[in-house]
Image 1 (cartoon, rainbow, N blue to C red):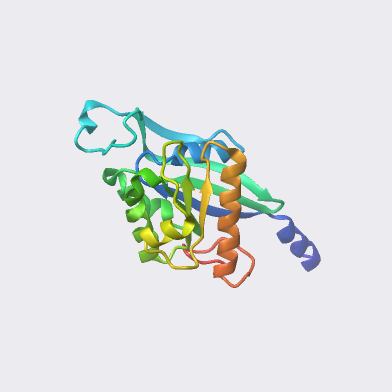
Image 2: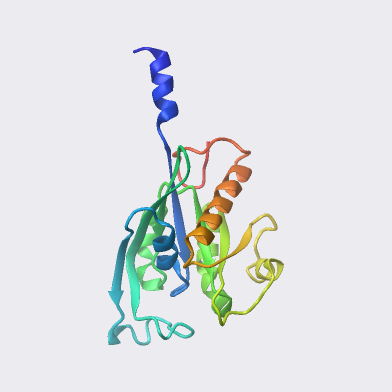
Length: 205
């Protein structure tokens, strides 16, 4: 095969990057993926029933009537040649067995935080830190949320000083896209600015 043709074909192929969107129950993961996806998102929402009483903590989100039981999936093109595949994780502890499967092959993650229930994102932060998967914090700004500075949130979550903390509105496509762009920049920074490509979880090339 002509090596020049092979090089041109490889250059034309888009880079597909797997990203996780995680966080506590009711923090806005499904909304985030749905707002930013350029395709109709795949959602596995089920209605909350009486069986979830005493199991799912709905304090602070008592108007929530559905929950993700497997994952959310969406796709967005950040720029020519770079496509992000988004996988929203379930928020409740009883569905955490899905996390290991969803995180396989992921290059980074967004941990959505709700300042009204900031401690709910601790498990996601611990999960990604323990597995060495780079992540950023996206603070979903609810109307009745608390107004904390990025430094205060970083201190409360005991994050590394380099971990970005960005404000967002999960309902807004442009806001969600800005968070994803921040994550891509952070991944390039963490990995020495080298070009991203499909690698095992926590790695870029």
